[in-house]
Amino acid sequence: MLRPLLGGACLLILSLIASKALAQPPQLLTPPFSEAPKPAKIALVIDDVGHHLRHQEFLDLAIPITLAILPSSPHAAKLATTAHQAGHQVMLHLPMQAQGQQSATEAGMLSASDSLAHIELLLDYALQQVPHAQGVNNHQGSYLTEQKQSMAWLMQALKQRQLYFLDSRTSAATVAEQQALTHGVPTIRRHVFLDNQLQQVALEQAWQGLLELAQKQSQAVVIAHPHPETLAFLKEKIPLLPTESFQFVYVSELLN
Image 1 (cartoon, rainbow, N blue to C red):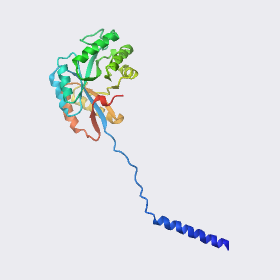
Image 2 (spheres, helix red, strand yellow):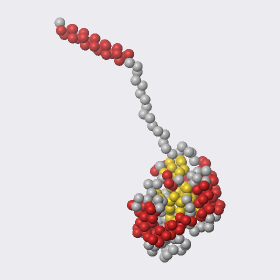
Image 3 (cartoon, helix red, strand yellow):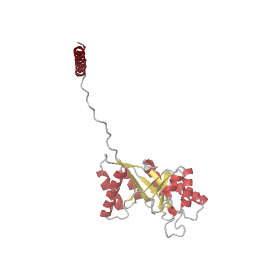
Image 4 (spheres, rainbow, N blue to C red):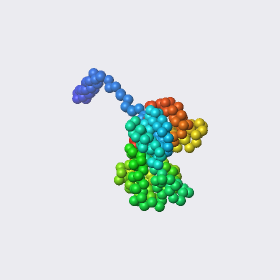
C-alpha cells in the first residue's frame, strides 16, 4: 500500500511545482550592453612656426592645434600669444644638432658638446622667446637625439620645468623618447609627417596612412608644416572626417 501512496505524493508535488512555475512571469533575456566604439584621437602639430604672421591662419581650422614655434623666429612671441589667447596650445620647437653638423649652426641650437648648464641656459632663453609653451619638440636633431647623455640632461631640465617632450623622430636611432620615460617626463612620439612632399598625391597618401594608423592604435600624432599647400589641404580634408570616427586633440592629451 505504501508504493501507490508514494507515487501519488510525488505526482502531487510535481504538479504544484509546475503550476507555480507557470504562475511566474516569463524572464526576458536582456542583450549585453556594449558601448559604441570611441573615435580615434589625432593630435595635429604645426612645426617651424614663427617666420611669418600668416602662420596664425592654421588656428582657423576649427580644431585643436598645437603650434611648435621656433624660438629664433621674428614672430615667435606674437604667434605664441595669439595661439594661447585663442585657446590653442604652444610648444617650443627647440633647434638641435643634425647629422653632418659639427656644431651649432643657428642661434640657440643644442649640440652634443653642450654641458648640462649650457643646455639649461639655452632652454630658458628659448622659453622666454616662446611664451605659454607647455612642451618641447626637436627641430632637426637627427644627431643630437641619438646621444644618450645629451638627451638625459635635456630631460632633467624639462622635468624641473614641468614640460613634456614630443620626439619628432628625425632619426630612427633616437633615444629621446626613451630618456624622457626614464626621467619621468611626459612624452609621445610623432607617427606621421604629413607634408614631406607637397604634391597632392603625396599628401593624400600621407593623410590616408594617418587615418589608418590612428584607427589601428586608437591615436596618432601628425606633424605638418606651415606651407600654403598644407593649409589648403587641411581645409579640404578636415571637414570631411566623420566625428564619430575621428577626434582632434592637443598633444598634451595623448602623453604617456
